[in-house]
Image (cartoon, rainbow, N blue to C red; front, side):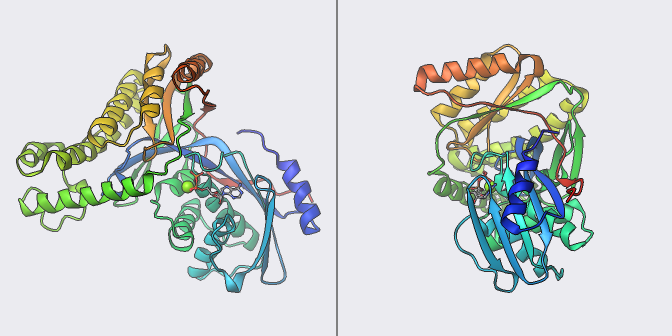
Length: 393
Ligand code: ADP
Ligand code: MG
């Protein structure tokens, strides 16, 4: 596990809150290996936790107040457990899991909290889920609720979607809470079933390259894709290709594509082709990982990228170039954009021994064309959230 500025956090905790923390937990960021734009189609995703985490320290209080500080933001705040209210800033992400715990009927004491994170904020590694899961786990420990990691994930998801009000799926909090070192997590977004898929070749690293493009277009584009999927499903149902009660494109397999070609306009057909083929790629990727066949896994990443670029049309020139550069570098098995697209970052599956050289080639090639060097992160597949040994104080 990665080393933490834990001493610094505990020192600041003691200074801010006038006493030492009683519990400490960590919750990692995540990256999605494959299975993009499948979640809202009730399909398959395959994220893993990465070795960058958020650390949360806590101590229960005798009253109903909560006080929290964040080392990253250099900010602190106070709120009352009986008057949780959205403020439109980072404190919402701290209140959200407490709101969801209360909603489930758990009795919580007031809490003193301190937060620090090695998950970069707002860069696609889901610092929000790491914070939500971390606060849920810290509150659980501090209050002695005895919850399981999957409960932290559900609480974080409920909080982010209903309290913060961000339309997010279960993937991020599930990956942060349930991740396993050297395993990917196959999540069925319909049944919420989670299976850890071993990565037979442990000497693998993930490179995460930021495109540097803020996803301003993402909101509108994302909603448009969701609507297109739903429109395509309507047509498929009306034509008797999807079962009458079908609620999502998940119900269509590759075998349905020839029939769909006859009834869907070309744009909707491309969207469906991506979703259907992407679900199949998730299972093929799991098989390749379990066999340690990194060449096959890499080919699936490249196929997924082509599908996102050409059929789903969510890539950008920056993302395209990052993937081309990665795929051309020796030791890189495959690349694709990860996250919704329209910006954000790319993911590259590389041999550990080659990771520095691949990162350098991507950064240099990108700088040549776009005039700025992306700061590429090298990550390992890590364990999900958990309690750290209780602080000494
Ligand atoms: P991502 O999850 O991709 O990193 P989001 O926009 O979903 O990006 O969530 C990022 C937000 O989560 C930040 O803007 C901030 O409000 C909150 N957040 C995450 N980590 C921290 C932290 N360590 N301290 C304070 N706020 C944080
Ligand atoms: Mg997020």
